[in-house]
Amino acid sequence: MVRMPDGDDLDARFNELVSQIGAGERRRMRTAAGKGARPPRPSRSPRPPRQPGQPGQPRRLGRGLRSAAVVIAVVCAGLLVVALRPDLLSMPAPQAGPVPEETLPVTAGGRPAGPFVGSPAERYADGAAGFVMPRARALGGLPEKDVARALDRTRELLAAAHLDRRTLMGGRPDAFVRALDRSQRPWFREHLDTRGDGFDTRRWVASFAPRTAELSTPVIKVDGTATVAAARQDGAPGVKIRLNHLIVYAVHRPGQPGTTIRVVLHATGTVLAHRVNGRPALWVKDWGYTSTPVRCDVEDAFVHPLYDDSPPDKVGGTGAPSDPYDLDDEPDDEGGCSRSEGT
Image (cartoon, rainbow, N blue to C red):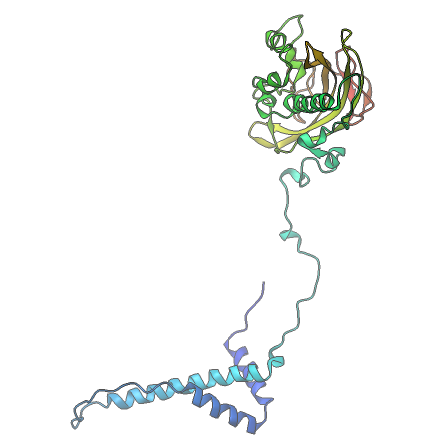
């Protein structure tokens, strides 16, 4: 806190400053200040002569003006001192030093400034920018424009499956349905949110179980690779696009941002692009993901985050802990749960 000097300190400082100026210079300054401080002469209307015994109001007013002139002269003299000798009022600059601890920003629960800080996801791309496709070229009997269209549609599929907010919060994955080829849409809808032994197509998209999670930040981190190679589909020329990506979400319990954790999805899949009856077609194959940390004791196709304060999972994982950020450790199709390192 900066303390202001009191009136006595100011007077002492002023007298000290004035004492450093020569007498002749002080006289010139007083003369200039007196001239500069003189108030303008007020316009006066004729007044009747003062009767004997009448109070001398005009004289008292004159003394008041003279007193004000003296005060103004003193103030102006002080200003002239500063104008002529500004170095006399120079104050030493505050010394540099560490910022007081109590002024430093803090975060709730002692967490770092961002939910991805300190993890490999910190350097990943934001959102769809992480779904980088290879350069398009004529391949597998398809012209370059067909390959380019297939790569663009594959990127749309990835974004719809893993970044669409409605889908992420457990809603209907309409964005993914629109991105699918029209030949696969009926099958996907028919098997969506089915229970039992059949395949639930909800597993093709990332959906947190309703009322289990909120996004702690609109940023979703993405990293991975995509390759394209020639491949035939039912005898038709075409290409195969192989996908391998990590998608990292920061989520917390609804209304409890202090419970924020990172959930890592390792998504893999294959998309076949070819021509059917003369039109470009896209066929999704071997599409899915693993996720961590999530519950293994819930039998549905949703993602159930395992928070730091969640009850222990009743199933648990098996095998040696794996690195959830290892792109080379691709998921298998055996199902079940395996152990994982922290996210």
